[in-house]
Image 1 (cartoon, rainbow, N blue to C red):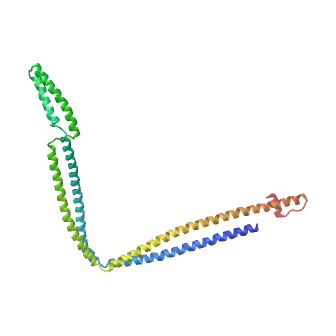
Image 2 (spheres, rainbow, N blue to C red):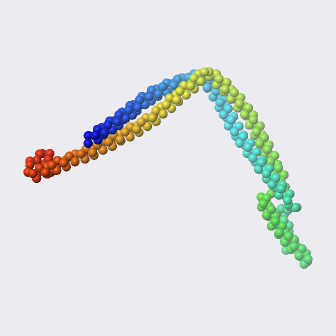
Image 3 (cartoon, helix red, strand yellow):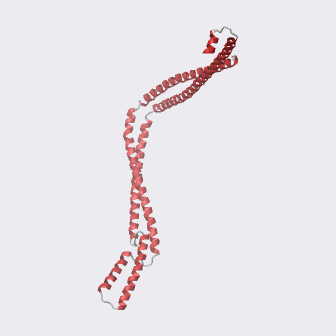
Length: 298
C-alpha cells in the first residue's frame, strides 16, 4: 500500500514539474512575442520614414506611370483585336479552300434556285400551253430530271452551307479585309509599345533619383516582415505548448481521480475490517468502540 502511494506521489510530482516547465515556456514565448513585435514596429517606423524621403519624386512619377498603364491597356486591346482578325482570316481561308475543293469535284454546278425556276417554267408551260403527246412526254421527262437534279442540288447546298461558286470571290475579299485590319492593329500596337517604353524609361530615371534610401527602406521592410514571421512562429509554438499544458492538466485530473478511487477503496476495506472485528467482539460480549459502532451500523 505504501509503495503504491509513493509511486503515485512520484508520478504526480513528475507531471507537476512538466506542467511548470511548459507554463514557464509559455511565459517566455509571450515575452519574446512582445519584444519581437516591438522590434517590428521600430523597423516599420524606420521603413516609413525612409519611404517618406522622396514623395516629390514619386509624385512626378505618377503621371508617366498612369500614361504607361493607359498605353499598355490600349496595346492589350489592339493585340486582342489583331488576334481576332488573324483568326477570322484563318477560318475564312480554310472555308475558301474547302469550297474550292467541293466545287472542283462538281460538274456544271447549277444552284437549287435556278433549277426550281426551270421547273416552275416547265410546270407553267404544261398547264397553260396546248402541246402534242410527244411534247408532253418531253416536258414530263424534263420535269422528272429537274426533280432529281433539285434533290441532288439541295443535298449539295446543304453540305456547302448554302454557298455558291460566286461566293469564292466574296470570301477572298473578306480574307483580304481581315488581314488588312489585322495589319493596321499590329502597326498601331507597335507604335504604342514604343511610346509605352519611352514612358517606362522616364519612370526608371525618376526611380534612380530616389537614391540609397529606397534600398534601405526595402531592407527595413524585409526586417519588419521577418519580425512578423517570427511572431507567427512563436504564436504557433505557444499554441503547441498550450496543448501540452492542457494534456498535462488532464493527466493530473486523471491521477487525482484514480487516487480518490483508490483512497475510497482503502477506506471501505478498513471499515470492513473494523466491522468484522466489531462483530467478533459483539459475539464475545465485549464492549465496542465508537469506530466499531460506526463501522457496524453506519
